Image 1 (tube, rainbow, N blue to C red):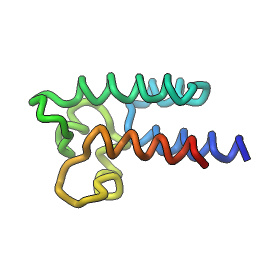
Image 2 (cartoon, one colour):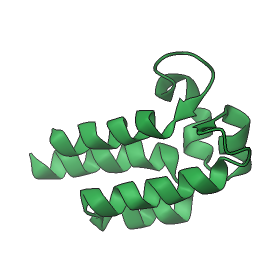
Image 3 (tube, rainbow, N blue to C red):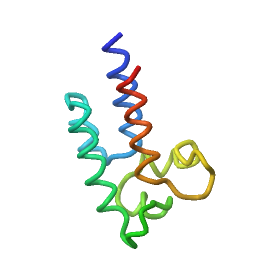
Image 4 (cartoon, rainbow, N blue to C red):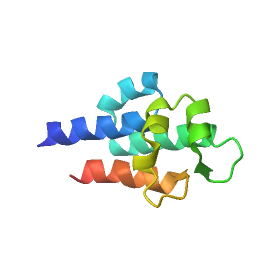
Length: 95
């Protein structure tokens, strides 16, 4: 069960972080994964509005997030918030 949860987490986190960081995610604790996600989010949020557009994600080399943007944008407002991404990570660790 733990291995399946780890695989699912890595797949979801891979949508949010650039490829080199995705490779590191396999051995991260929940807290480390959140810290990594938060750092990536802050760097990508160039206009500092607290949300990422698909363009911001793509420009920050968050290709997996950019290509899966509609699925990650749960409320369909055209943006993904850090809270939305953190919830996805939490879901993966809670399984």
